[in-house]
Length: 219
Image (cartoon, rainbow, N blue to C red; front, side, top):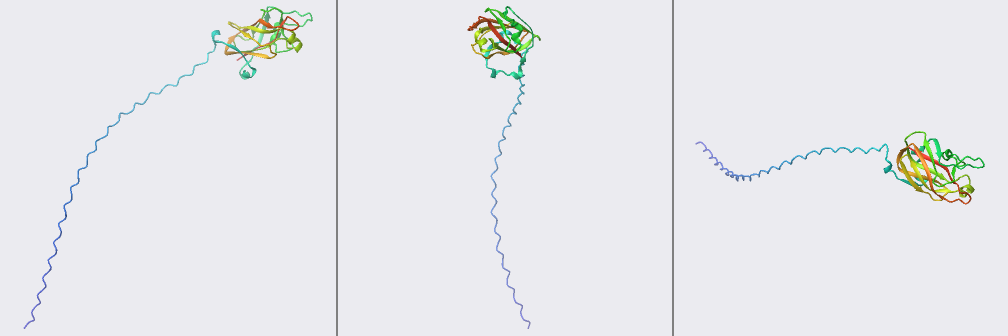
């Protein structure tokens, strides 16, 4: 009698797969509001560089003022002495000793010579070698500079009227043994200079008035 076949164990029924949770529908993203495009800034028109005001070639007499200044304030590097071609005077002392007081001697830059006259109101005139010199400063050694005896013994101008062509002005001078500098605020074109004695510091010995030197400084 055949041996009976073993009955197989029944296959286990698998656990059912869990149904996945449904995915949540995402909230819709808000569409951003477009930013306004700014108006382009207008490019400014370039400003033109102003041209410097040119220095006038000549100033009228009405624009000129004169003042006494110290020697240290004079810029000698920008000026030079004008050449004097001729000189004349309304009066001139004739010395018994024969010493000359020719008016041209007041323009020779020499303290041993001078122009000398005896009356207030007289004047000395010099013509420049070159016309229309740009006068900037006038340097004056007033009185007789030969020595203290002659400086204090003779009169020294205390008031002068200075004329450069059509420019004329009056200046007062202290009684001081020094070179005076009359500075113009602008250069002034001229071809001659006249210096008139209007008043004096009285001397102790003589009633003559002396001017040792006049230098016309030009640009």
